[in-house]
Amino acid sequence: METRDIVLGVDIGGTTTSFGFVDREGTVLAEATIPTEGRKPAQTLVPRLAARAAEVAAGLAGTRLLGVGVCAPNANQNTGTVENAVNLAWDPVTDLRGLVRQHYDLPVEISNDANAAALGEMLFGGAKGMKHFIVITLGTGLGSGLVANGQLLLGADGLAGELGHVVVQAGGRECGCGRRGCLETYVSATGLCRTLFELLADSREPSDLRTVPYQDLTAKRIFDAARAGDPIALAAFDRTARTLGLKLADAVAHTGPEAIFLFGGMAAAGDLLLRPAQAYMEEFLFPAYRGHVKLLPSQMQAGSAAILGAAALIWNRLAR
Amino acid sequence: METRDIVLGVDIGGTTTSFGFVDREGTVLAEATIPTEGRKPAQTLVPRLAARAAEVAAGLAGTRLLGVGVCAPNANQNTGTVENAVNLAWDPVTDLRGLVRQHYDLPVEISNDANAAALGEMLFGGAKGMKHFIVITLGTGLGSGLVANGQLLLGADGLAGELGHVVVQAGGRECGCGRRGCLETYVSATGLCRTLFELLADSREPSDLRTVPYQDLTAKRIFDAARAGDPIALAAFDRTARTLGLKLADAVAHTGPEAIFLFGGMAAAGDLLLRPAQAYMEEFLFPAYRGHVKLLPSQMQAGSAAILGAAALIWNRLAR
Image: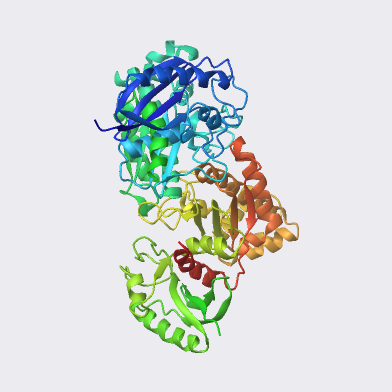
């Protein structure tokens, strides 16, 4: 029987850590999860992960493990450090790669989820064969992974490609990063909720959402209201799409991508967000770029995207 | 006698075409100019250039020509085309590289001046040894060349790195590109003049520049007035620096450069523009980037920068 080459892809989340064994074509042969226990240090997570992964691997006959790819919040691919990890009470981890290598004498790559998503899209998704593209992950916040000349743009400090923190409006909305006016305070699930409340205040238009307190509001409720024709909910999506289109046009002027992929729950709101964002982007694009940049939903399966992205980190390295 | 390897660097401008023979260390061994005669087609310029360059080369004993680098307005490095060249009445040139190769059976590279300036800075200027940096050329407009992972960011269509056309304000000032609110309408010699007139209108403050009609106003006059303490001129520089700092912070969030170099006449206004722009950029930077990005004047000599940039196009290719 021929040996099948596989890698281990690991996605460390605030609550759950998922992992899976992935072959070169992006097939997940086996996967499982363990609780992250993010209140305990990273040093306790890695041995538990390795032990559970060994159990799962025992069921995979005829395979050869070639490396491990890990994505973790705020992980720096250049340095291997993890600082200020969202939803984790970790002290700064100076060498997550080293921690993993204590259990695997193999190539190890770490990165944040948006960069992993970009490589996942390149190896297994809609960006196959593309040398220049951008992946935007839309969730509570806005993450991004930029690929140029076939390589991730990591920059001098490994921190490039943070489009969630380009400035939409100087002195605008308070952001979790400590500044004001960042893109993710306008374009994200929470940004959409903030825009909706602004519009409820600005306008006298009736809306079913006038009965909902801020803390109960979700992007899903705004989505449902918009689908039902609620004018304020529709206006909130339109304004969000316009801001996204404007800043994507700026991103195009920087890196000249062939396509931009939207990943995450909000990307599914095609008619409400993706299509109008494409139209606004075209309006704001430098004329030479017009009609040249596709705005597309990610082709990655929501369920296994994180594991595939983590696996792509190491498959991409092995391919070089 | 040892043979000295040289390349020919050519800078095609609206009025004058300059060229020079440049060695690997960036020494210009000989240089000359010819009139561009931009009303005539590109097909007539290249033979005149080659003839005059041959005369100049005749004086260079013991050299070997390795290639030709050409910068021309709006030249596309990927395709070799020149379309809508500023100040030239050329029909679209589908293959400028091919035109040059009719006279030189050698590697030929073409690009626009900002990309050439970036490679010049990398090979011969302040960006030696850097893998991630940006060069901003400030003149009548604002050009830019972005380098990431040691390579020019050209993008899918060869048109990436047009920071002059990121949007400062949707619906803002009219730009030559047909849109509104582009960065170069605020940050450039003409942008500074427009800002000064806006401030003269907004404010009641006295200013010597209230006697100057718009068509006679220059960045140099505003510079001189600011040096003499004119409050409106000082405010115009401050506002220009703030807009530049804001958009440079966005550029950092895209590509994570180690340094940003300012090239051109306005970059010389260090205390009035460069230093306050650095302070504003720091204010607008995502916290993780703060203190990590230097804003520096270009280290290229103004006189020979264009020829050196053009020469760098080909030295960089030969080094790969």
